[in-house]
Image 1 (spheres, helix red, strand yellow):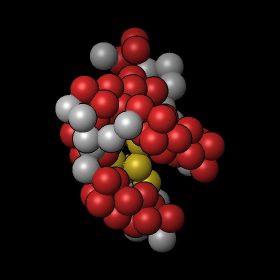
Image 2: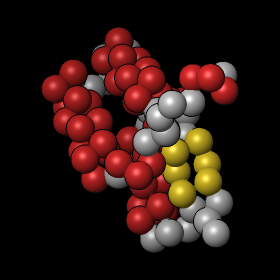
Image 3: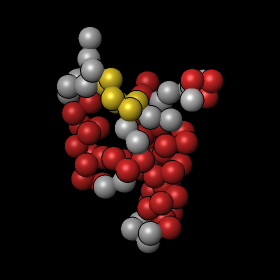
Length: 80
């Protein structure tokens, strides 16, 4: 069974690290997990800091959701 790691917004923020982590997951070295809240936080902070245009990060988030739906954690709020 693969190790599961929750990837917070600060880990997904740098493009090179995000790409590396997703590639490692594709190679089944581990299984990442994230929530919509984490993806939204990443997106907001990148736009706020002027690191990327909103349309570009929206596309990235859309691609992450479309191509990696099994990494999305839902119905977790009761555990927080």
